[in-house]
Length: 200
Image 1 (spheres, rainbow, N blue to C red):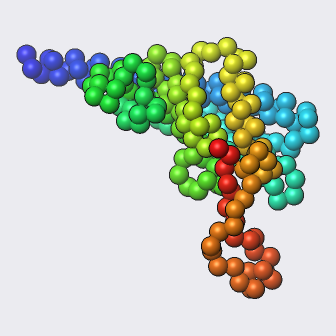
Image 2 (image 1 turned 90 degrees about the vertical axis):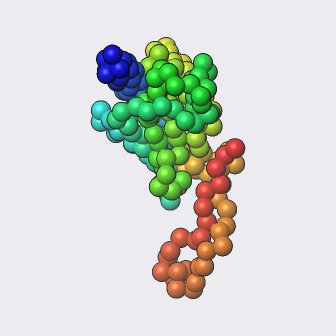
Image 3 (image 1 turned 180 degrees about the vertical axis):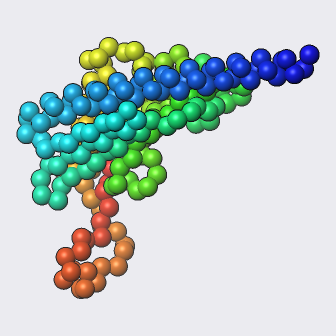
């Protein structure tokens, strides 16, 4: 009967969505813990770092000096959906795969320096495979159950990029923009019209 087939397909898709969502939750918890551990290490060598986490959000702020700070906020997104970004697709899938195993959960990252849109995206599949792309880490992959030291190394890489952005090191720097900057802006103490130049 056709309705029974629809019910079976719906149940299969919903199960895949729940599994992908659960794997994204597991990865987010491990990422948050890894960022907290690496933040402790960074404080030990003299960086001023604040790291705050809830069950679904992690915020890390690095202060490298006066007016030299940067923040990264990571958030677990509820639900899962068919992955459409070719760079984030599971290696075994293609854009033409209709199998619900193609569903991914998401962990997103934002930084004020990059604007309002997410600047880091993690796609997490139900088998625990995750892939990421963005401004903090251009391209990486792993498994949600990777050993702690592997995940900490990845978190250290992200924290290093955050330090680059705060301290303008590693080619991050700033570039002048074409925005108007009047004498009133200058005398009012408004910052000069520049924007971050991200490391490549």
